[in-house]
Amino acid sequence: MSTKPLLLDGNAIAAEIKAEAKAEVAALTERGIVPGLAVVLVGQDAASQIYVRSKVKTCGETRH
Image (cartoon, rainbow, N blue to C red; front, side, top):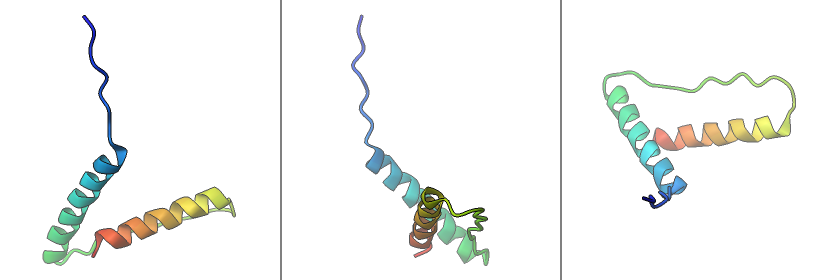
């Protein structure tokens, strides 16, 4: 008996997660709770800086 491989659409999954997070942020904001993101970046590693910028951008999109 063989099973068919399951294909995952990473972009679709990411979009679902972001939509869920956006709804949760909206619900919190309605209750007067404003979620935020705090980042401590140590050093000058370029890859880490890019990663942090990406997270900050994503969080900004989630709040709007």
